[in-house]
Structure formats: structure tokens, C-alpha cells
View 1 (cartoon, one colour):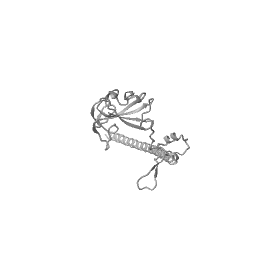
View 2 (view 1 turned 180 degrees about the horizontal axis):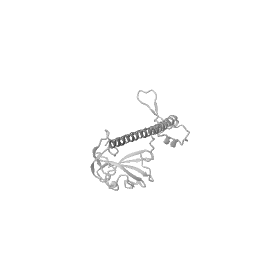
View 3 (view 1 turned 120 degrees about the horizontal axis):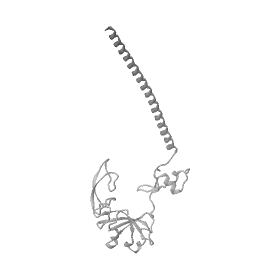
View 4 (view 1 turned 90 degrees about the horizontal axis):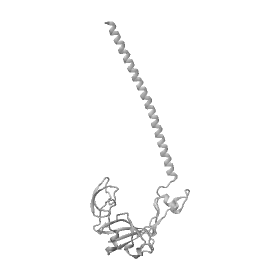
Length: 243
């Protein structure tokens, strides 16, 4: 079985191929998101604690969290489920996935180091992988550079240079800052609030006009009803007097 071990502190990951089944036995019958010690893999792993994050079996089917079996099942998956990406709106599909319990039929098991041990592991914990992209959200840029509210975030965006074939000099690229509050966004917000207020006032006036018209019509109907009733009573009196 292969173990794909990641170390989030440095951004590094490494693939280990383990042939000895005795080293892998502590991982069997464990579930995804479960943490355990990695001392069984060797002396250099002493003190390390890893978390199981997933894996694939020998046919390439991925493990799915929440499926409490160590075998393969067919599930009807839709948008929002793991192990499935819908191609059309509202699409559902029955797909084969493996349960979240580890067994010997897996070909790759994914692990994340939660706590580092005493010794460094060559190629994993002794090297630093630089981040390719910087933060994109305005609040995260402020947090990274410890900026104040009045500082301009746009001056602190991490740019990267891209060099392609046929280009004489490298091209600089920067992400579009998300959730950036500018004078235009504040103006838009004020405009939207004003529109909401205008609509509310208009609906209030329309409701008042409608109620006024409704009371007028009801009054007219009452007057018509009263007149018709007085005419009817007068004709009844005349008919009785002629008899």
C-alpha cells in the first residue's frame, strides 16, 4: 500500500510505498478523520500523530465519509456530495464509492500530520514549499501584513511573474481582491438603500390611496342600497293603500 503523507505546516507532501503489512495493521479498521500514532511505520516516525483523510482502492474508487463499511457500494449522488461533480443542473447519478473504513484492499491511503515528532522525515518535514498564490480576500491580506483600516489593501497584493514562450519580458499577474470596500461600493450600497426606501414609501402611498378609494366605493354602495330599500318600502305602501 502507498501512503500519501502531507505536512500542512510546510506545504510539503510525500508518497511512501510500504510493503510490510505488519506496519500497516494499526491503520486497518480505522475510519476517515480518525487520528492515531504512526510509530508502526518506523523509528523515524516516533511521536508523530497522523489523521486519515481518505484513500483509493486498487480500481481507483475513492473513500467517502459517512459510509460505514470497508467495501464498495453504489450511491445516488447529487450536487453537494463528495466524490461527485454534476455536469448539468439538477443532475443525479449512481456511482460506486468505497466506505470510510480502512482495509487491505486500498492502494493509496491519504494521511495528514497533526503533530510532529522528534525527528525530521527526509523530503517531508525538512523542506519548505513556497505558496504559489497569496491571499485574495481583503481581510486576509490585512491579517497577513498587519494593516490598519485606513491602509490601502491594493498596494499589498502579492503579484507573481509569468514567463511564457515567445515573451520578451515576464508578465506580472495579481488576483482580483474580494470583499474590497471602495467609495464606489459604498455609493452603490447607499443607492440601493435609497431605492428600497423609495419603494417602501410608494407602496405605503399606494396602499393609502387604495384604502381611501375602497372606503369611497363601499360608501357609495351603502348609499345605493339604502336608496333602493327606501324606494321598495314606498312602493309597498302605495300598493296597500290602493287596495
